[in-house]
Image (tube, rainbow, N blue to C red; front, side, top):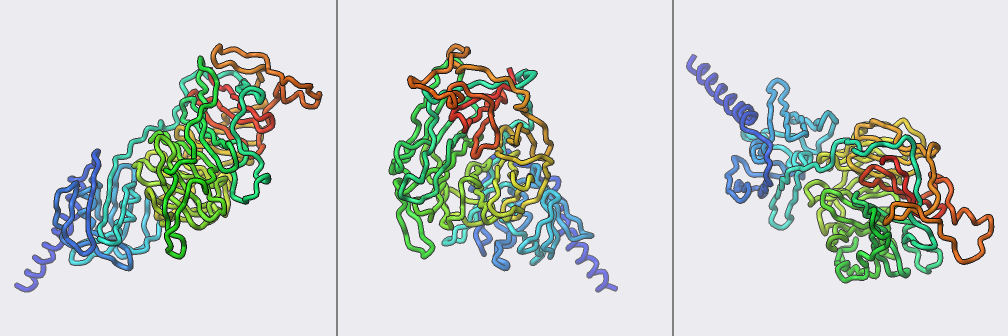
Length: 517
């Protein structure tokens, strides 16, 4: 009888400890609004949170090449909510808008209702629950790094700050029908564009037509070239009351673009600025920075730089699979992690500044699809304009389709203010990250203004005529007619009011589609 009583008391004690490990966390946890830096080390019980020492009940360890750490420590340090279900032996973790469900001993998990397969499931060892730290931290949008030499694990929590409004319509009053203004003229303002690469002896990847991006403040940034080996970024302000002019911003002929890297054989190589050919521009609104993607002459290296407000190497890739027409670079909200797509492989890489591409997430995409990225409240969404889907990407885990778009051919797509904007055959569409689609601009209903818009006077000047005889068949170049959508690689942006700025490939000019007063 005494043995039975003793056994019951021991069981009650163990259950109490287990419940305390989980149940009390639901009352203690609260999402932190401050930056948190967590330091751990493999096989060492000493840890720290923001420099304050903590002794762990069990040291982090490798299990099947996966770093596992005590669940209670990481959730308390981050301020996550934990709910334990003893009947199913499962644990539910909640941090901000992220929800993770895992089961002891099972590789099946869920992230925001998306089914995920873990490489290593949670385990209980010595009455301590160990969980795969990278899986949890990255799904909570933390930055995780591992030092191969010291075996130190760093987890950095930067509070997610969403500066992008959730599908807020422009405040300006919408026009009854679109109007179209001619903003430039080839005889006065030539838009920087790449020339025909067949003229040059080298066979490097080369941008086509006009490459541009915007900061959403009526500033336009364009890639330009002064010679086959001299490239730059130029800025054009489209503000009313100002003179329209193209201003030089940064040249790629600078030593700041030099760096060292290891080739596939492990040999250190030098990459010099005169080897770099830029192909794509990207602007990140949260950080107010401009990034560029390009390749070397021999297409052996793809390089990503931050070019404004300062020059720094972000990442490089030795596979030569990345193609600027299809791929993107997307900074995360923490400002330290970057997502880079590889459409050829159907992957999205997670990378930190100065690194080669390494860890990746597979996405459900046919090779060489056109992908457009959007960060919304700390989550990464990708629009595949070829298979017309929007996917939610969980770095290091996978991607799930959240919407399939019922729309015709998508000729081009961009992300702006928490929405995707699509160019179809005759009109533009706006779609949110959940797939809600609306018609945005129908050019069949547009009214075209004659002349050249004057930014200083807010009036229209007569269209300038070249001082040469113009054949009747060439008159359209003097007074542009309708915009024909779908001419590759036709670029467009959205201005602060929600109007569309588009480069018209047929007439080699910028045009503005006015939708709002």
